[in-house]
Length: 585
Image 1 (cartoon, rainbow, N blue to C red):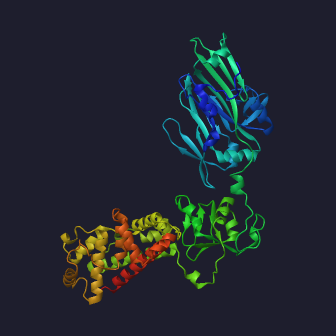
Image 2 (cartoon, one colour):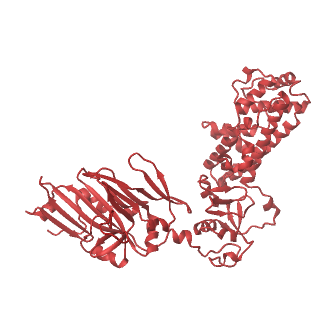
Image 3 (spheres, rainbow, N blue to C red):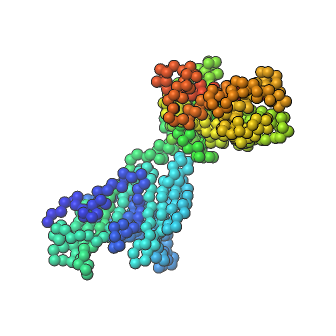
């Protein structure tokens, strides 16, 4: 009976047709019993010379099994250099894993040469059955390049599985770097059902085999008249070709930067001291997604990855342009970092143009709000001390430890950093709403209701009048008293009864609309817009109307409206601080 070369056992057909290179993590070594109590699978991966792969794939496969080692406990002294290898048809292949057996356990470990090539660093995740070691490339960074579950315990059968997996980009790169084919060698043992094909092979014999290109099936009839099958085979995973890691990340490409006549290469980049190139600040988006990894300075546009690499010597220009000194960009940075910045390059702006120089950007706007809120907290704290001879630190009111932030840097706080993230003019409505929620989280939620309530109670307002008020309305009420004090000359404590009387004439019910009108109106609009999902459309329209934005202009993007909101909040706190400074204590 002639058997086609594509034939596979029905029970294991998925293994034969499966293409492991479709996965992000490729299994390069495995010991497991996946199918039933009597089954076993072992997989190893090796580097094969390009001239040797064709004969392996075109002839029935025969291979020493399992992976061969010189130990443990070599039988000769001296034993020479320790070795690990796979052998087939008189050829010896270098493996991508090392393995040995001892005390009923089999150990699998990634090859140290591979680990060294990519500078990988181990990271251990503890587990009750088998710890997992991840190997990370911290320079790119790329986490989980290698995943290693290294120990298989054995007692009559495999009790725990062991597996080594490697990211396919790194495997492709290693194949190219070593100029060899990376091939997967597999051995499968399993009980199988009798079929017409198997019967035709065995006939009256207790054993038989099917030889195909790149694999061999061996069938054995056991004492229970069941058919056991052993499969040995090889399949290629990656051929030498592209270099997605070393080539793309570590070899500087020739680039033609706007505004520079010469092509910048790996040889001449250091010949342009003081020369700036310019990029759109969307270059920061990739880094903003991982603030746990990258350090970003929103005010300059600079970025660093720990002490591994840094893009410094940057400056913000206009609303959304970052200038970076060319020489410093190339100096000590990976090729992929340089290429990433190049992908956002723009024509050189006219840096002498006052309109461009004076234009604000998202970081300036965010910092303006932060500094005004810090001053607001300081003024409230001082008023509290002057009125009642008590001193509540202003972090009690605004929720931020200002001294700590001044020492560690404003942007060390993740909520403040987030409001300073770049913002394209073309953002859509959904992104706009998310950015509004960032403002609400960073500034409104941090206000401490408890301390503003205590402040009003100490002034003399009745507890039941403000029992239902949240932090914003409490702040608003206090600002109103200060505003009224400033306008009338009445003192905040001495004349509080008169101030409260005048407030009641204008706004008798504190919990009903219209609420007390102060410069805090912008923050109320932002807060209601965020929390009231049912009426979000109406509240969004109020925001648009408040900033006199042409509805049609929003088709081009919501970024300008967000700019106006940032500016509005900054100006609002500036006015509030002015009121607090003019309050008659």
